[in-house]
Amino acid sequence: MNIAIIGASGNVGSRILEEALRRGHSVTALARNTAGIAARAGVTAKNVDVLDSAALSAAVRGHDAVISSGRFAAFKSADVLGPLKQAGVKRLLVVGGAGSLEIAPGKALLDLPDFPAEYKPEASAGRVFLEELRNEKELDWTFISPSALFVPGERTTTFRLGKDALLTAADGKSWISYEDYAIALLDELEQPKHIRQRFTVGY
Image 1: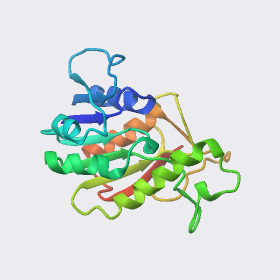
Image 2: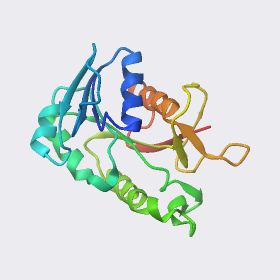
Image 3: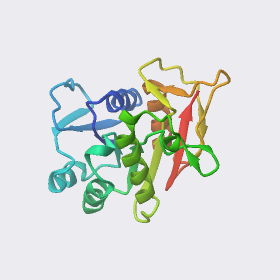
């Protein structure tokens, strides 16, 4: 496929880029500054600010899918959805957050009194983004939430998928590596099973 990745220079975006190349896809790597993205076969790097709707629309035009891996606090859902529609791209996969995942029916991780204050703005913006996506009927979107701890690690290929509830391992830890998360995201891109849905991935 021909894929565009918004935020391709970031921690998660760079792993998604690697996984996409491993599978033989062509990638347009989008970031405000692509200087750190190595030039190689299968990758076209473009400096694009997600808030520049005309530039973003032009950059994603002709792609089979767009993967959004930017920070939610930096832009709103409309900043991505509008340019994709203008460009005629139907498929959107969003690197989500864990804050909106449920720890009990109707109670999100973000709502816990001890949820770290420094992560609240990003987590809150991510929840709003998901709520707005759920009203989106034109694009074939998927919002993929990681587990509570989202960290660099190994590409093990062994993980679990869930829906709206936080996944927790037997030892009580809720986590996923960037590398295995990228596998789950590319699996969904290649064989869609969660169109207009959120799902989560964890160990």
